[in-house]
Image 1 (cartoon, one colour):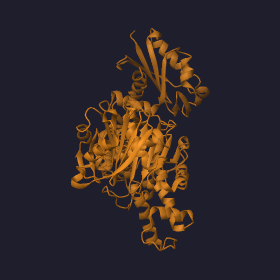
Image 2 (cartoon, each protein chain N blue to C red):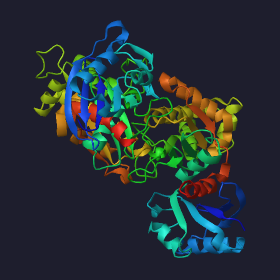
Image 3 (spheres, rainbow over the protein chains, first blue to last red):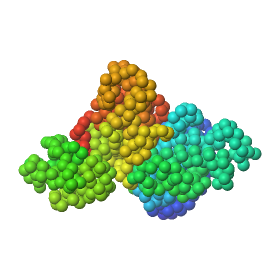
Image 4 (tube, rainbow over the protein chains, first blue to last red):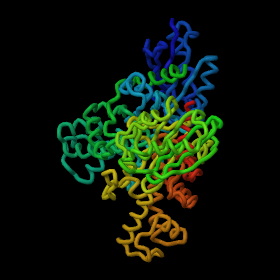
Length: 310
Length: 310
């Protein structure tokens, strides 16, 4: 076995694990189920055992990187709702299993952004932002190939940026009108419901009580007017988020990932169109492109935290 | 003469110049007038001669830092409207006057932000953002005591962030509804005019056709209802900008500078109050404080670019 970096992406349903060589090339990857019993107390042991099973010489692993679904500061996870972890010192707990190894931990959206920055859509660029459009919206800010964490681990938490100033839809965070309420998969369904109820407009999705974000995008592509109205509003808000980002850290590229981004260039072209309407000319060449690594972005980024700090 | 760093802050009316020792302590400072004749072609010669006059041994100056009112990339000034410079290669031009010296050039708002980060209100913190509220609004983003410039030199251009989505006031940049149109000194006067005309509400500023931002703040402090309405709206938008910043780079501190910030803690307390209404709890401890270096922030930051890259 050669010297190896281990990248681990902990999700609410599965944990993705990858072995990489020191240049960052993927050697092997696999998944295990996330055991959330007893407030997630078995998760780290499960990961350790799974790595042990896949590895013929643990001494060849030089470091471990973790992406975690929640805010992280200095290796400590404040609150990962989906795992049951509260104030969980992942770095210190895992270091008792693998003595004297490098361990880096960060928020999963930040880690995915680093993955895309090192090996994906933003590979050629030193500054980028990734928006992950899933059930919620995560984000990660990368400058000079390093994750920006921020003072409270909240850098890149773009999903909770207020975009609807009045009568916004309530968000899980306790506020109303967050970007996430109108531009995540949930947000897209929210807007569809709202317009469908308000306008009673005919739509090709009439037969579905709760059409998915994908169905709404597909219907918009086919010319369904109600769906087009929803997609226009969703991409207005995403274009606005890109406008803001282009004036705060002004990245070379904004990468759009997550399940919703499966709509591909249809989505990113519409976001670009809306972004350009904000017309601040010095930033008009900011690229907005779909993510490239899909579900592997997390393990790549987790590896990258270890590789970059060698 | 001891080894010296020279910090230069070029403004549309005056040029501020400071000599600093290598630890960043100010040794001497002075000002000269900005000669804008012939598209600003005399400005660099004037600066050079003025330094020559103040200095008994030019060989002891180890480097020069410049803050310039316009976007800068790699030492080149794209467009400094107030000086008449277009595509002006300041670094290369000045280096022909002072051979083999370090020269660093950046936008004046970025440079002021670095000044406050190194020696002013953000001195104790490694990540900060400064908003400079003057005729317009400038901004600078600092991470690990370095200026973030961005791909197009537009990082920190927070004044052109759209905050009024419909029927916004036109901005100099060609758009409408920018933060600058409702929260700079000009923006404050804009809002006062608008409400005064719309409501015909009585105000203690009735005798003044065009009251200044300072007069409006002073009247608000004394309980003038129309002025309070204006200040509430101005600080709502500034609180919103702080909310956005706290979710993009998530700085430890946001520093409020520029002429408008002379309203001091009355202003920053109101911004904090509005900021907290956005209620994203992980960032609730973000500090919002008045700048400390006043007009010297630029020369301190200009020095800092040279000192930091020693």
